Length: 172
Ligand code: AMP
Image 1 (cartoon, rainbow, N blue to C red):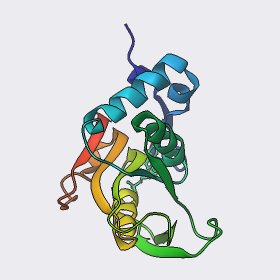
Image 2 (tube, rainbow, N blue to C red):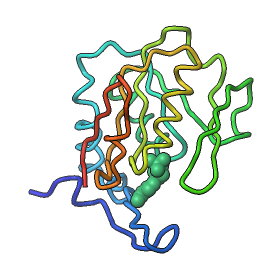
Image 3 (cartoon, rainbow, N blue to C red):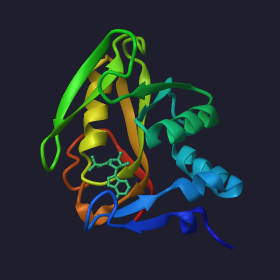
């Protein structure tokens, strides 16, 4: 029997040469695969008290919103600059070349809210780390960070260096 991970498609040289892009859209398009993937993503957290899932733009929205429904908790978006309409908190973070910025609504969650931060793919870990930092700045308690796919050969886990558990449904 096939597993949802068989539906992940490798797209070479996207978005630039020498990057193998892990395309999860075929997983999302398959009812059984999507359901299985979400069940696996939710499983470790079912016994954990959580108030919300924080998802990172943009594939983290798709997985995060579905996971929030799966766990019967709220969903809060972390977005690229200039997209959120109300007052935001902003965090700049370094990329391999240059920097990027993420934002969260300043009033998205009450202080002390217990959250799970989610994205689709963990590559260098910079994005997930920034989202965790932003959630904390917002006053949330980050109970975990989770991704559907971890690119383990890039070593983000070795550099994680954070008490918050980092969990992946699948590692390459
Ligand atoms: P990073 O900050 O390096 O961990 O990059 C993570 C972000 O970039 C995630 O939001 C991913 O969606 C995306 N990403 C990075 N590398 C890949 C890849 N090889 N395949 C798919 N998405 C990727």
